[in-house]
Amino acid sequence: MSKTLLITGGASGIGAATAYRATDRGYKVAINYRSRDAQAKAIVADIEARGGRAVALPGDMAQEADIVRLFEETERALGPITHLVNSAGINGRRGRVDEYDAAALANLFATNVTGLMLCCREAARRMSTKHGGKGGAIVNVSSMAATLGGRLGSSAYAASKGAVDAFTKGFAREVAAEGIRVNSLRPGMVLTEMTEARLKDQAFRTHIETSIPMRRVGKSHEIAEAILWLLSDEASFITGAMLDAAGGGYII
Image (tube, rainbow, N blue to C red; front, side):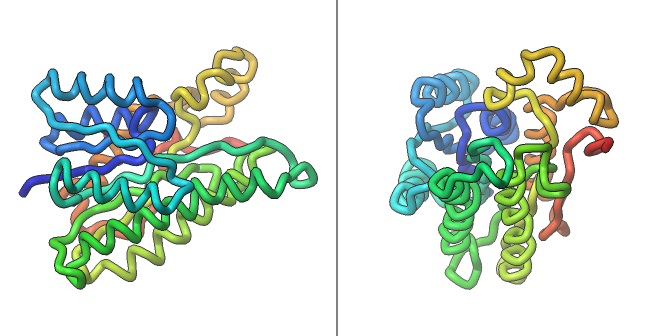
């Protein structure tokens, strides 16, 4: 069966690593991005040079119209979407609860929660046997922050990822009999473009690594491999699950 994978936030970090490895496994890949135009197009060029098939498609996951257009353009370019990875996300503004800003919270949840849910809506409308589809698999990228409320100053981000996990469980049950599997992947601290600036501070990195049982941060390709396993037929009886890819979690 032809496999078409849409990756939101696919131009960097975990999304980009997933795109590269997915094409090696025979997927056609749509790489969504919001602002990393040159980076997304470079990934597509690399994939095509290796004999794969990919497209780069812009879209802000906080905007419903962009999400609908993204799914339509993916299908026009690559055919029916069979797999989805919701990797787009933002950290939001760090700070204590007494420092919250309403506009910043709205933007955080618009991207990390509402946008992800709307992507799942569009996928369900296409994949569900109820709507004439042939099934599919979805992985929502959450975070270990959802399990403990995050590190200090990250309670809002943690709450957004907790919402992702709760939604994943409910959505998975709704569509399990319609050929769609939905799972959540919860990375711990991973070296990506989003985290590299902070991890360059050696004192901060040491603090983080001593709080991880494996005593190191993760790598993007390690998370990508877990995502691709959840998407694959090897995980055919797994839905509504939360898979932690975090070096053992937190030592607190």
